[in-house]
Amino acid sequence: MNNNRLKHIRSLLEEFKIDSFLVSSNINIHYLSGFNRFLKDHDGYYFITKDNAYLITSPLYSGAVKKYTPEISLLETTPDKWYTDHVVDIVTSENIQKIGFEEYDLRVGEYWDFADKKLQLVPLPLRNLRIKKDKEEIEAIERACLLSDKAYGYILNEIHEGISELELDKKLEQYIVDNGGSIPYQAIVAFSENSAVPHHMTGDEKLQKDSFVLFDFMATVDSYLSDMSRTVFLGKPTKKQMEMHDLTLKSQEKAMSLIQELWEKGERSIPSKLIDDAARKVIEDKGYASYPHALGHGIGLEVHEAPALSRYAKDNLEEGMVFTIEPGVYELGYGGVRIEDMYVLEEKGLRQITQSTKELIVI
Image (cartoon, rainbow, N blue to C red; front, side, top):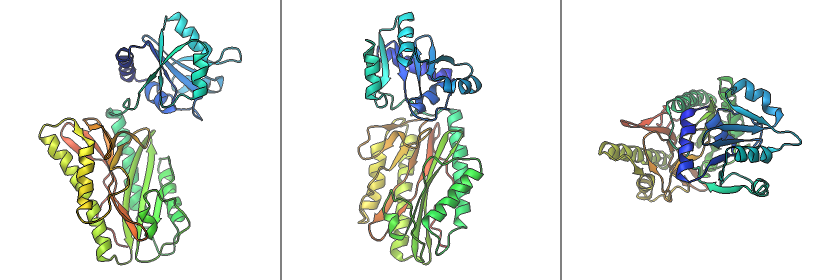
């Protein structure tokens, strides 16, 4: 249990004029309580009041709670005393009037279970709860990024004509697992024209000469994620293919340099939309279509967290935020390039966490 995080959530109770908060998402239960052993969503609640915090769950998890987070106040459900019954008891004993809940997580059926008990529920936006990372979180993210860098160095030696996307994917993911990480989502491995599809589903396509090879993959270490993309080439790239790679890199560099420039001028809350616009313009000015995704996203316990870096984002980049910058140049039916790295904003400015070379590697 992290007392600073509980202190922060209790400050939100005051801000939203509520007496308690019902945490229902596994990710936020983990973040606030330290317990991360649920096998599926909504197997428990973390109920936070002004003075106490209770983990309400099935006896199936009691042993794990007592072993891994013994400091937590545990309330076990029984056939005669379900989740809502425990909440009613706490509400009564602590004279609670209003319960905040995660507006983007609590299921409709669960909502009505609580409403039927005549409990007053108030939706609470928690999108920015984890937007800034503390020292321990950044260190865990750095370990995940280091593993990704090593995995990328390994997979370069496995690329050869005739191998399939799935075969490369399995080799990449097995390396990550063998070296202490886990795989949150299947990697994207895209050959040739498949690389022009940003969310290509890795398949049986065989690698042929004169082809782009795009990797977009993640690793989890100590519950925190990395996210990195690189594009290499098998054979002899054409002038256009080299231009696409160079332009993607220049777009990323523009985003990086603009953040640092504004930071050094004293800006401590940088509109992320401004950064996306600048990176996008580098590509559009050369006559290529704008990339069909955001420039980047926050990352931590989940692969997509606040802040968002996009044309539509209202987020500002501030100290303590960890995010990706991942522009791309794509031409459907031909091929695409994406370069993605992870960054943290610190007192001195922007620091890149992933360290693999971004130069076009020709195999």
